[in-house]
Image (cartoon, rainbow, N blue to C red; front, top):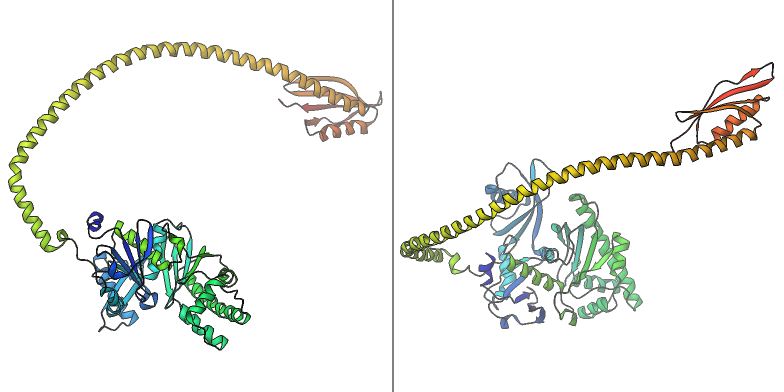
Amino acid sequence: MAKAEEKRYSSEVISIDPLSLVSYAYSKNEIKLQKIEKSDKNSFYISYIQSRDIISATIDISRNIPDSDLKDAIEIKVYDELALDSSIEYAITYLETESKDSKNRTFNIFIIDVSLVTSKLAPIKEKTRYIDYVTVAPFLVKSLYLKNFIEPEGTHCFIYFQKNDAFLAIYKGGQYIYSKSLHYSLKEINEKFCELIGERVDEEDFYKILTNEGLKATNSLFQQNLMQLFGEIFLYINDVLVFTKRSYNIDFIDKMYIGSEIGSFAGIEEYAKSYLGLEAFDFNFSIAINSKEWYIDQIHILMMLSAQIYMENPDDNLNFSIYRRPPPLTKRPVGKLLGVLVASIILSLAYPAFQIAYNAYLNIVLSKSTESYNNTFKKTSSIRDQLGLLKIEKEKVDSLLKNETSKFEFRKKLLKEIYNKKITYPMKAKMLLEIFELSNANDNKIESLAFKQNVLSLSIRNKNEKKITEFIKDLTALKKYKINTDKITKDDLLKLYTSTIFIGLTDE
């Protein structure tokens, strides 16, 4: 499909503002101002509809309705719920959104008066025969994700101020969620500013203040009133975001992009941080090698990206143009009929030739297959012989491995025993030394000792029963041994106390 579309227009894109009719040409990675009437007729023409000119809503449709009846069901519900005037022709399109409702599907609905589209696009149509693609401004933002200017992870808010409109758009995971036309276009901001200061400021002069000095104007009166005005604007935007989060189950806005038709406003990021708690990024993207030569309304940049995407993969689901190019001849009913007739004639003449050619082809394939089979059979015979020899060699190796393994296990066991003897005996001697030192410190006399199964049996005596007890406590305090003891007995004849202590030895 894309190949067929490419033949209908050249790679040059002409983006057109529907109000000012300012147009740019994008070709070979360069952008330039260009009058519409001087453009190549085969260029791709794209324009947009302002957000304020479209009606948007969210509706639920039962999951029981089949896809074949979905469009009719949506239109009926839209006319009913939104009380649309049945005498007016509307263009209605929709996008399905995620829904956890097991009974209903949720759709974003977009409605526009066809006569309004006609009046908006008529000035462009007078200068060019076709307008290939027309969509609503917030939908253009998706091109930034599809062209990898923005990573789709997270939820993003886009705010863009135009001279005659302003819009807010929310995208989540690179997909459209919600948009709204804001009450504060650049012209409306200028009017409110003039009301606040009590004098008239020329529109263009006001725009220069916003772009050159931003919200930190050198004129203290201007700065004070700009701060008040943009405080009101961001409070209004905050209300819109609160509503959107609640309505669409959005927990957090990860990034916010703010821009305008005339350029960025210095200091506006502070308002986003103060009133919205969000870090603001410039809504400013460069796509051409000469993009930095002058500021280009970002809507034109978005239109150029959207045009490229459409040319790569045509999708008219959100295309509101009523002046599209006619499809290629092969796509029209007459063209299809001609194609069928030509194909029938060719088939009737070509069938005998095809049979002869196909028979010759099969003979060639058979000959090659036979030759390939013979070669493969020779190779497999040779491989079988080699496998027989390898099997004999493997048996010999297995026998040698078994013998060597037996030797290895014997040596391993022997080395382990030698190691245990070398390590265990010095460790026991060290432990005895430590025990004897504690015994002497308490004036105990050792009558006998014996090792059995890692347990040291120690018989001691002392004239003072307390000394034996202190010795046992000192041993326990080391936390190295498991101590067990018999009761301390007294020999009345010799006036001595004796006790047998069992000291558990570890393998360490």
